[in-house]
Length: 425
Ligand SMILES: Cc1cc2nc3c(=O)[nH]c(=O)nc-3n(C[C@H](O)[C@H](O)[C@H](O)COP(=O)(O)OP(=O)(O)OC[C@H]3O[C@@H](n4cnc5c(N)ncnc54)[C@H](O)[C@@H]3O)c2cc1C
Image (cartoon, rainbow, N blue to C red):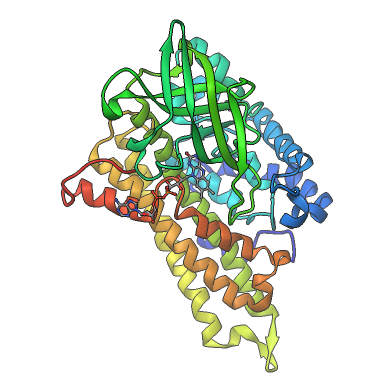
């Protein structure tokens, strides 16, 4: 398979003039700084059997490669393009950021523990809730993340609290100038390697969800302990349980106000939601190209397989659905840019509805596209070396974290006044 991501179908997906220069810089960075690394380390990046250790953790040398890409992207000013310029970010709108993500994911997932994604802030990166920090806090906690020098994790989910965060059982009790955190978090991406943990906990101030607060914890704190690795469908090697035991933090390690924990957590989740279309459309374009190439190259019964309608239609359907999804994302993100900011603690119902649509709809489409791509590629579609099976696994995963498909539909229904209740991600 060639390394080029260009194909005859790319003219179908134009990037607006205003964003094209930054998308070109991203692409140049990938071509010059990342693909050579991927090629040089292809032997062990391509297969979980070689990039994970016996416990299911990402091997330190692979993590170091990812960190190197992240740091270089930070130095090039490309890592945190979604964050405002006054905190050192690129100042892109959500709509503009869509095209950057599309470009990054157009390269697929690098056949395994790919390096391309590491150039762009993700779960481990700086997120909207941290805009609620004051100047001193920003300098200490936010700037290293924006510059890609350090990484974070977000600790919301627990064994007894997933979709329904009102069930969080982790506690934070006030003792003089400290908060003492105790609890057990689960499925925490980047728990293994994070420098900072953002932790949702129930305080002894306020009632119900009004008692929740978001804390910043240095993962060197002796009260932070990584538990079992959560071996998952993506085989990422960085998702784990976290135990907080007598974890003492200063009162200046609260994000915003005590009582703001749930809306802050939701602003983090909403950020992930609005990032989904760029990821799904980018990966969809990768799958479209792979299907198209294979339909022309692979022969059966004396002809390229693409001569058969049964092979043409999945490609045609994917192209049409990519157009529809991309147009929906462009229009909806532009509306969101005009009506709200992701860090807002109180979102208008129409904005909440749009963010949920932007999450579940592209994810469902990507799942269909990945399934079709495997079918068109035949046996090779299921091989690790092919790269497509990894996208299929990623696509299946996406429909759970940052709020399941069902929770998105429930949220949309709620904003339409159909459910008569509150709560749920
Ligand atoms: C790979 C991976 C990485 C993750 N990373 C993180 C992370 O970094 N930080 C973090 O905090 N969490 C993380 N999560 C956790 C993720 O956010 C939760 O798994 C998700 O929110 C769902 O919670 P749950 O698994 O407890 O499912 P549950 O809430 O138990 O739901 C189970 C099923 O019931 C359905 N359901 C529940 N309530 C309703 C309802 N009211 N109406 C209709 N259906 C309903 C759900 O849709 C789902 O199908 C990660 C998960 C995975 C798989």
